[in-house]
Length: 239
Image 1 (cartoon, rainbow, N blue to C red):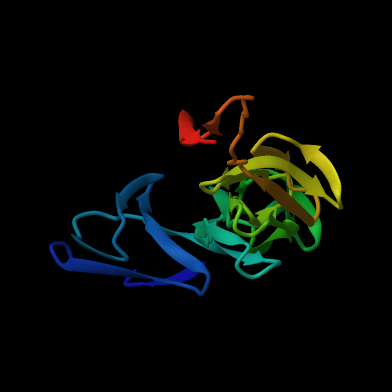
Image 2: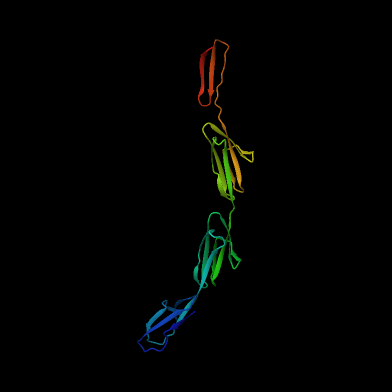
């Protein structure tokens, strides 16, 4: 674990300096006298006034390295250098579009949880295995194009909820949604889960605006107008 210098025979009253040097992959933890910690400094000084015996203790260091099987699948935390025998915890925060599969060490599964806790006994590399979630394109058009607008079309991850909303323009009313020329809904709002690429058509129809004429057998004609927008009015016109 390491080496020490400064031990020897000293005249009473002289200053003694003990120095601890840790080997690679070790760290100095402290000077001990009869199992009692007397200093955590690698350089330990004291005045010689009696025979004394010290032990420099070193702790093996272990490195935990984290890797992703798919770049940009998520953010990993918890990697670092740890004292051998201590507990460590690693985590993954997934990015949109990815699912977590498991943690593996040397291709062997060690956990399927997003957080993996373990005792560090050696330097290891832990791989976070993820998979890409399929995405689907949901498209929708208006028929006629001037009949109205559609909101909600786009790309969705698998099993995400999709809501398409058709809004009629002035002078039009929504009729129905069709897919592959089949009517699937007469509600302006259509909700479903994304499980495949789908294409919809929102049909609109023009609102009827007309006149109704009533003719009486007399010397006048009564012209009556009926309109959803202008109401009903009577006009008397000479025959």
